[in-house]
Length: 257
Image (cartoon, rainbow, N blue to C red; front, side):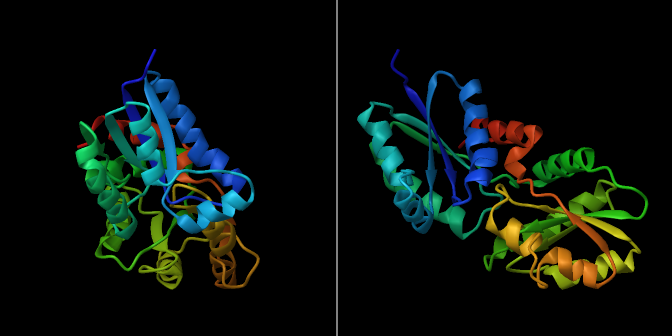
């Protein structure tokens, strides 16, 4: 039977095969099971990553190529699900491509990023609290990507939300913006936490998580914390690997606008 509707899952992309399988492909499979009557395609927005994968013999669509496939197959209603965490430059690029294809489809709906609003932040805080119960002197550090875009304020809002939910032991930092690791370390020490569990606050546990968070270099987050006397450990698990966060992504498909 011909499928009349499509779902386009859009990620920045990763060259790490293990991370790709655990997060991106896992989410795609999860969505396929729940939307059996839809054609599912995933696309990467990073042309650099697509080129690297092409040299390996792997073809991943760009958004434009994916939309063209839908059109060729006669699918004129598409929901676009970004795996991105925040509104920002990458999300705006997705919005721009969606806008350029609006007239070619009967309907294109674009989903919100994972941290769309306060309720999403509360949901994720609760999920992480369940996944990582901490002892009295233990804290949980979430390492986000960070951006120069004004939407970077979402990371500070996420930490505030965690604390408002009663999870005072959760701290949020970013690799490429504020709050950086020095700010996180200061808070951890001021609150007398002796042990810190570091997790990537990213859809995929890719290069940033492997190198910047858990790497052997002295500048990695785990080693900087240890240098300050904090017993730091890392968990290389992207947000796309948690079942309840996959459910949250699915709810964003239903709310596409």
